[in-house]
Image (cartoon, rainbow, N blue to C red; front, side, top):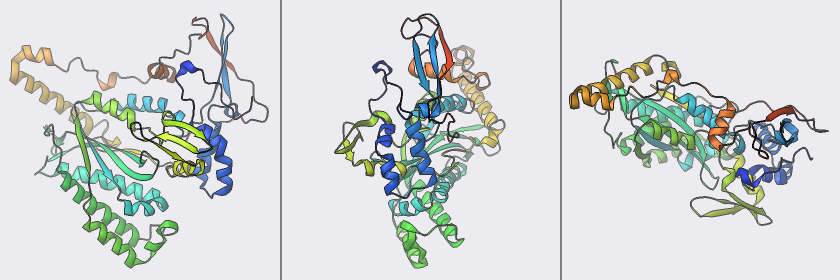
Length: 424
């Protein structure tokens, strides 16, 4: 078997017929010869091409009952690989249950203006860090404002850099608690169910914070002003850009609120470990180019070269953290302030139950049957795989007996058995 050739895809597995890896294997080497790419981008292409092929080694599942053999190759574990996110995503969501608060939530999206995208392409680490910092501080500042909520709220931010057609479109998705812990920590302050903060106020405050932070970074010489950002090396040009952006209204998108933790989990499952393009959106690859679905039934066709160029736009800086937590959700509060907030929420709920219906109502509506975060245990990857796909790896697909045993896969001649480092 060719070392870069994946194992056959049985129709019953539901795997897509075309994968990003197929496009990389067909056109990746030509793209690398024709274009200068970063070391991180080159590694992404190499890892995706090798993912779940003999290059990375693997094992054979052998049925001790009927003798059926089924080879499985190792994953590349690169966080930009469309095939390597499902288990990481499921594991992350299970662990987030340790912190989720039993309250309602809102979804807020901060988008980087188009005028700043060239600067972000040259300075992804700096600009993305500022996007997180300013978006979170906008929400936390309004949360603590006595005229708004007067409380400390919780925020989880997830960075996305793409639009549906793979264009560069950085934006920050924020999951925000619909209430907060009073500033003295004595009680939980519930916010309005259908309303968080005025979007105009969110936009103005975010604009001021981000532009001020960019000005500070510029004055400190922290921005790379080469390539697509070369024109901004002139201080007058940079000042003119900021002035134009100050005069422009910034739209912050606030989606309808989530009803509770279950809906938050479902949403996070779609957004946390998503990459620019899932394999299931691919339609075809031929002499006309690569066709993939954008929104609904709409599709776009790009040349293979343009497809790979756009795909590589979304390779994040090395070790960049694309999921961050602020306020009550910050890691430093996981066992302290967050647990105080949880206690205050449940106490307020019990008080409300008693006020409405006495002990009888409280018994019927109590949170006593809700799972305690401390009782949630981590599960192994086989259990997660079964939950995601319904596939039990111990069951032989031929005879149906629970008799599958794992054996080492013979090394492929000329192929490296060492997997790349985990970059997820």
